[in-house]
Figure (cartoon, rainbow, N blue to C red):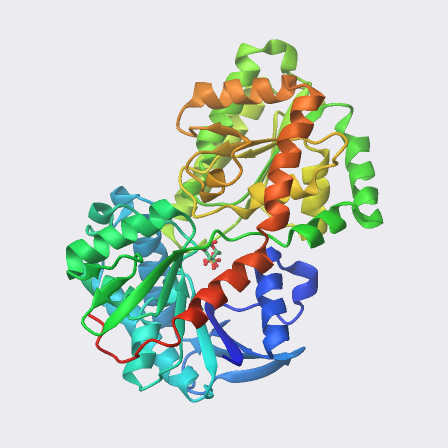
Length: 465
Ligand code: G6P
């Protein structure tokens, strides 16, 4: 295996160093090692997108990108990826409105991407596709005669088999998943759900090693919890730049405690439930009023999708109501910010916050939870409150784990975190940090590629279901 080819809907920008998170940085590091190629959508919508990818050099590796047409952006990205697959993968069947035309466009984009990518492939490439936007791409590459090892990693949760089957196209999509040599998930529960769905709806057979076999083709199913670049994040959080930023923040905190939440503005993140839990803490413990604030960053996301716009107005009115009812001349209970911030700004926020409140209703992993831990001052670390329904809860078992739907339980966890003695905080932080140091994003990439390489000796054909 010589060259790594990464495929994802979004590709890193050419100025990656200043703005990107751990995952993009680590994937970039792996491409720098292998001198590879990153292929995906350019982020641009044009009237008549050309069939040839645009090539750019990004350090030691190449970026190859394609534009989307307006119709493709709407059908593939908005309607099918984010209004159909996203709610199904996160168990929100109430939001599911499957649309056959959008599904056809979704498949057509994978077909077009596969054709464009195939002209760039070389003997010895290993291909690693990221996330739910491009599930059919592997099968398309096989049908074009490409025999390279094909790996797929799902960053979002895989739901229970019956939930997935609510999608009218579940069999075709399962068959697309099974065309890969290796399919990776964030948690063992997700891998189990996938196995059950593939066995039940495609009729493959389960082998002793957990692979699923269909005639001469088999797919390996693995668990690879994604990590952050722990060392780099920790170093950045301790840098003089971040120190200056934390001093500035402390000066405007007026000795109040901060709780921070950092998310994309998404209905899976449990933001309304979080605001209500914080409101409950303030109502039930008046002594905390004026002494504590929730700083909630909700970076705008998928704004052309109706459910995201609805969520935005709901959060605006909820935070406005809470601030209007409880706020004073010089204190706002919730500082609600609809903007994205860079990594240094976030590291400073994490470091000054007594509590990191990460309470998604459902989440594949949640890297904010990991970054919050990595940013803490070892002498005086803050407390992570983490949803049981985030993949990260399988690893960060020393966080205060909560059910995000249970308002009083989240409120109780906030009070417990505020009271937690220093020794207890240090012990929990050390254990979580040990885990993050060993299981970082570089280990994630290495483990996935090792498992992909191990599939190389198997027969490859397009006899997948
Ligand atoms: C989630 C998905 C990613 C996606 C990101 C941002 O984390 O797993 O694949 O890139 O959200 O969403 P966007 O729609 O802006 O790409």
